[in-house]
Length: 419
Image (tube, rainbow, N blue to C red; front, top):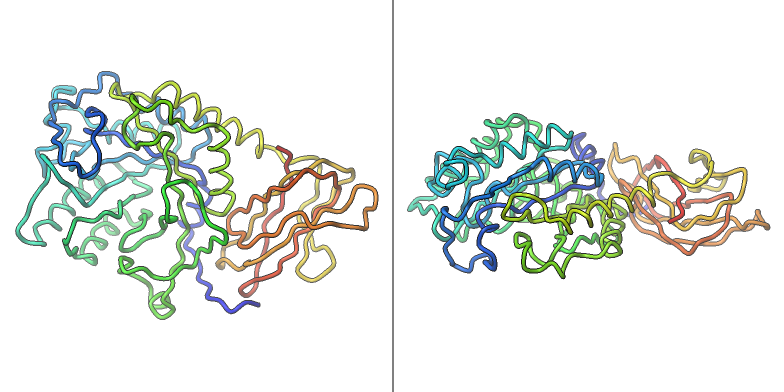
């Protein structure tokens, strides 16, 4: 057994890992001012916000077809523009020509998610700049503004499953974290929070869609993780599943000037296998166009990705048995009555009592000399899912050997595939 620290996840964290694949939609005032960048200081008047064919159902229906289980909308980005008619700022949809100021992007997005059965996520950036920036002389005033806007989002649209805080913060502002978190948790007790203060999930550390190996769930406390259980404080660690956010194009918002940067299917499926296949969630962004719809080429590529994921992982190869002990200590196997060509397996660990496995090997028994086996894969953590890819081999028996673990462990399954 390795020297290690092991913490138990909550049921909501286990549920989050089962979501696996989500969609991110950066849409707002920036969608109408092409070429703008974060913090560039260029004003974006509300008069420019006019999506003549906003269709959140198209976004979410496409996401559903691609296999996504959740979706996140930028309710307010760093520019301060509110995609709902907030009472606490003039810089919102209420002061635009769209629907004569009666529109509400958040409401349409939430309704679409509910119609198609996707979990609802809202992004909120604490920071803001430019025309819509709200400036306060006292920190409490800014916290009041922050809580008031979050309250509108968390009390006006029913259950919100996921609150995605951007880590940019607000300059030198010192937030009253206990007050803010108490307000959020009281309004939506079951909500998951990304990254900041009292997080349930964490940023993987890059915006390229890739998780590292190993990818442990029990990680050191960060300075911005303010609220923790007594056990977490004592250990200086926290159980936090990782999420790999990334974008379809080279930018988060712009979708009319860089069509040549749309990622290839090969790159996207690689990102899926390096994220979901390493026990993290995969969060892919598309910036809807100024019309309010997903661009055609991005839509087509997303649907191609969903089809490729189903082709590779929709159905296991052959008629292999359930995972059973293989005889040797810490070894488990799946067996078929005939040889099949395999080039990958997906292994799942039971995380109910926390993550344990820190090292493993996969062996394939040979097709003729069936008592002989060869090593085809060496891995580190398994977590919710480890996708193990190797050169194709014909076999009727696959073995996983656990080479490192933190206390007792239990494997849920090992399934073979041929891509």
